[in-house]
Image 1 (cartoon, rainbow, N blue to C red):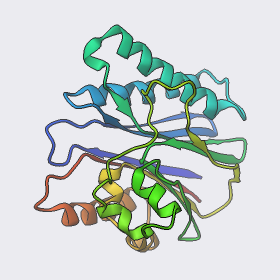
Image 2 (image 1 turned 30 degrees about the vertical axis):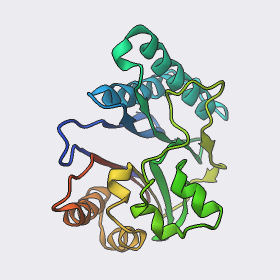
Image 3 (image 1 turned 45 degrees about the horizontal axis):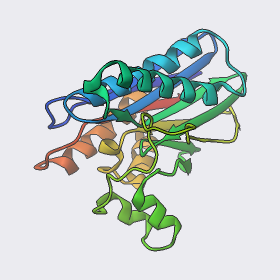
Image 4 (image 1 turned 90 degrees about the vertical axis):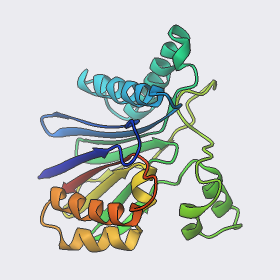
Length: 241
């Protein structure tokens, strides 16, 4: 059984440039999260375009092993087309993370620093690696993983949708078989920056449903962000029982 919950909040900002989405077609599911960049509300346009484009392709039913690649390419094309049509959108960009669940398998893809965490039996088994300067420094052994959250270059992204590139340099996971007691958390940096992984696991173990899990994590995020100019924060929780 698949259960899920979606959350998106503007935090202390005037506008919410995050977007979340999902689409269900019988026993197949697609979950999405995007964090727009560009200011003046244009980030919201980019993230919404990315979500809508991927959902549309998923709804068309032309899926399979190449779905994520085609979905990310289509999202990029939609954003670039809008940039060309409307000069006020020329600087808009967005991150994107997509979880595809069909035919007994899970696959996910991402670009930017919006993350997907994969939990098995209550423990984090895997997470996506940010396309950012601090993550690159971790890979080079120059800083530790825990230093990413407060690094001065935290917001310097190396890959996003909406850049002038020959190809969409997204990252895709290996297929994972759907089995009991799996959980997934898709989240923007405004969410994961304010909650440590051990708290994600602790709240997961105590929760009775995805809604309760998100509510517990949201409480921690808001507590840790109190007194700061909190960024937009968004998350999608997915449980497989």
